[in-house]
Length: 103
Image 1 (cartoon, rainbow, N blue to C red):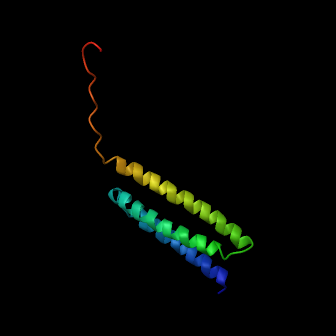
Image 2: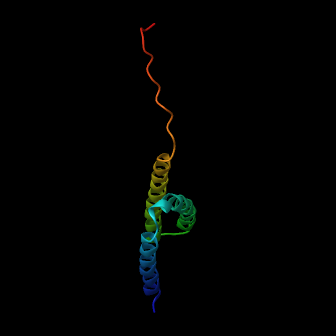
Image 3: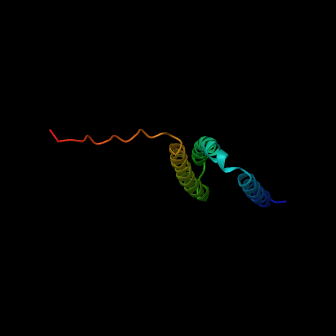
């Protein structure tokens, strides 16, 4: 089997496994899992930057596009996680306006 077919097989299998794993997670676990996934994405992004440093030609272009997309994904994940966590924080009670005449 050629190397390209092997990598394509890995990719297709990882897509199927990823879909199965994500679809089985209950909604109460999504926030902690997203938080952990964001940390992992940061490590992956650092590795992609290191790999792109040794790439050349078309591989360098693909690596740079992958780095940009991974950075957008990571930042978006942190934003979504932050918004989800804000749903669980208590807001301070609103101040009542002072009644009576002004100063």
